[in-house]
Length: 83
Image (cartoon, rainbow, N blue to C red; front, side, top):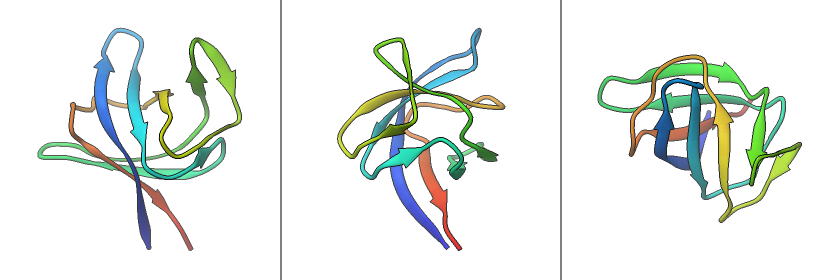
């Protein structure tokens, strides 16, 4: 099962970081699936930043920087993979 946790609002290609506006909490260790028109990427969350500081968990409504293992696009959807 997958739960929508956010939407990509920006992608910094050179550093491989996506800005995600969260609709649900997300934390280090979660498995995420990013989906868009040409995007289909599944990975473990290894780095979350807020205001240039590393954090372990981000809450609903926050905007975060998320290191991604591939190219993503604005408006791609981020899902948390649940058991």
